[in-house]
Image 1 (cartoon, rainbow, N blue to C red):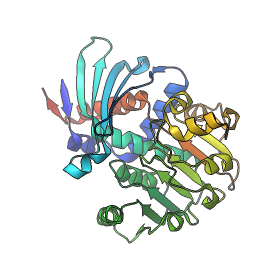
Image 2 (cartoon, rainbow, N blue to C red):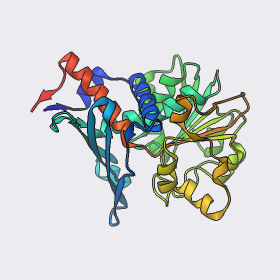
Image 3 (cartoon, rainbow, N blue to C red):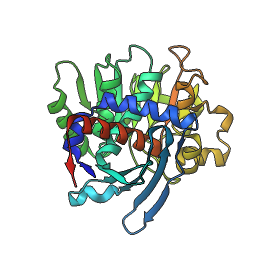
Length: 328
């Protein structure tokens, strides 16, 4: 059995690879060629954390698997990652466990790539300004995905409620990317972060909306990847009502898990006829995409196990090809 840690994966797989892997996964899922049951979510009430079990199977790839991922927002107080996980893949010809991957990094990659896929497919051409809400465990991969998916971005603004966190994160991104080709800014408030933004990425666990639809300009793309429980509401109702098109990674999963859709549906603020459908159906040619530069498009993702299986399998194949990893 092969074991692949974060460094092993980085050696063979980058964000652009992950974006293409997510597109393949979405296509497979929407074609019904992958089994991705709704995940099982156990809540740690004492720590306000969640432990999630995500099984799946893709017959065309000959792989079944399971990801166990934990999301504990308070872990940063203890110097621990807020998101941690393990991905295990099983060969469906032998039933043997063939690889264990660092699921924390796989999750970072494929979740960042979900935003990257949405940007590459739905963002207005020539988008220049992006903003990122949240500086937690998902923030860096979301930042990476913005730049990997859109080569016209000139400025990225970062906002979180904690000033020290956003300044620290911006300093890290400046060190990683420099400032010659892109301006990286720690926004003082939500309003300045959203001002004239073409791409808005939400990566928070907030229980109240973090954006205001009144401040969203025409032509914007909003990618929400943070809220994954009925109590979380990072996208506000005004944005949903203002959107011309709303896509999901999985409509069924989002409407089972994400509070920013469950609550307005329950209250009657929005109805399902406003929803365009799953991104995989667009990839497969069954739905239309952006039709003009004024359309506001929302993409909401809670994550599906097919993403982990496809991403993990492609990483595994590259690692075997290049002789990377540890045999155990």
